[in-house]
Length: 96
Image (cartoon, rainbow, N blue to C red):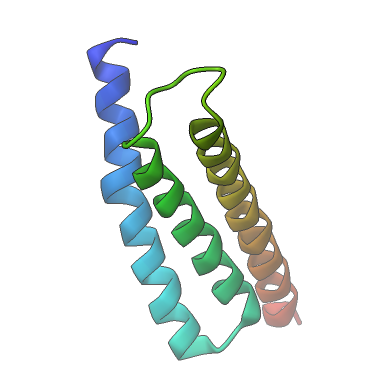
């Protein structure tokens, strides 16, 4: 993998996702929407899985790395579903 791709993945894992987690938690405290709490859970699962992948080398036979990779994608999908849920409810709440 190229150096630029490694940089972009690291930027996403260690800068963007923690900022998204903090914003989701602050928005949940302010708005009290369960979709924001689910979004924060998805972001925290993504971050925890990224941290776990640092300790294991990628290998098809390494079960811990594979489990961390699967949970990272589950965190991403959970966050995406929660964001769509929040956006859908907010869009219908503001329409006349």
